Amino acid sequence: MYEVRFHGRGGQGAVMAAQTLAEAAVLEGYHAQAFPYFGAERRGAPVKAFARIDKGRITLKSQIYNPDMLVLLDETLPEIEPVAEGLKAEGVAVVNTALAPEEFDLGISVVTTTVDATTIALEKLKAPIVNTSILGAMAKAQDFVSLDSIVKAIQDKFGERLGARAANLNSEAARAAYQSARTGRCKAERPFIQKAQWLPDWNELPIGVALPTTQVNGVVLGPGSAWQNMVGTWRTSSPHYDIEKCIRCLRCWWSCPEGTIKRQEDDHMKFDYRYCKGCGICAQICPVSAIEMVRGVKTW
Ligand code: SF4
Ligand code: SF4
Image 1 (cartoon, rainbow, N blue to C red):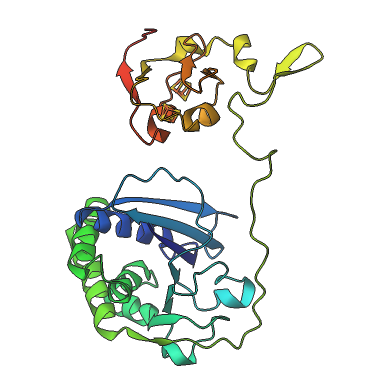
Image 2 (cartoon, rainbow, N blue to C red; image 1 turned 45 degrees about the vertical axis):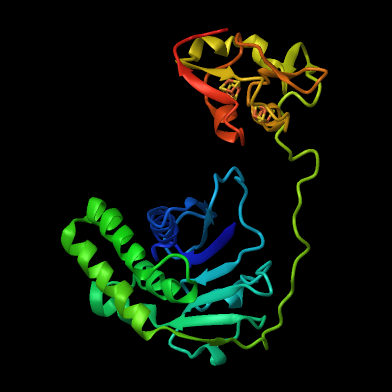
């Protein structure tokens, strides 16, 4: 699996960049996912976005803590947060800066591609929206998603939202960035404090039905509280469980938000359809497609 973490500021297009990279990877025949993480949601505030690319189906849903590629849409971000945190030693960085890779100080020394994406964006788009320029540089920094696929994804995504003219200008920005991007090894002079990696403790794990139901002043809380609300009536499609395919990984059991899935003694699953609201999370998370959502209110 190849994981990419984007750091930018609100308005620079980090989220669109992640989505466009994922679309380009799909065009190359890979599976991909892209999703954002927002803090204070306003223009200029630091934002993160993530993309995962793999040959097979991707069931991992977490943020990316140890990326293979780090993308900085704003070169000032290392001054305010340890953006390189968790980047693999053999990973690569792609940075929007006018500096050569050897002049840029990321705080750790890794192979780095730099591009003056802001100047390219201002020339091509007349606005400092650097996402498509940075995508062009990213095409140069790895070798499994080509520039052609990235440009095709830009045409599709930007064309659909902003029209053909905007799609063409953004494609030009990507191509210009690809041509001018430079690769070398960045400096590591900036003090870099690697924070301890966050791992969830049991309080933060998705609870499914793994913990007992609790009662406070007669009100049932936590897993199993769904009996108070027969959410099974919300359902428009129902999970069908194929016991033969099930490898008993327990992912569905952990993930069902209603505590509908009961773990049997042999670790096979049993569904209590009175409380299944048909959200489909179990089918999405199952790595072997042992659960299939079937239209209608079924109970089997
Ligand atoms: S569809 Fe699956 S995850 Fe959603 S409520 Fe029903 S059993 Fe739980
Ligand atoms: S996620 Fe799929 S394979 Fe894993 S226990 Fe549930 S049904 Fe079985």
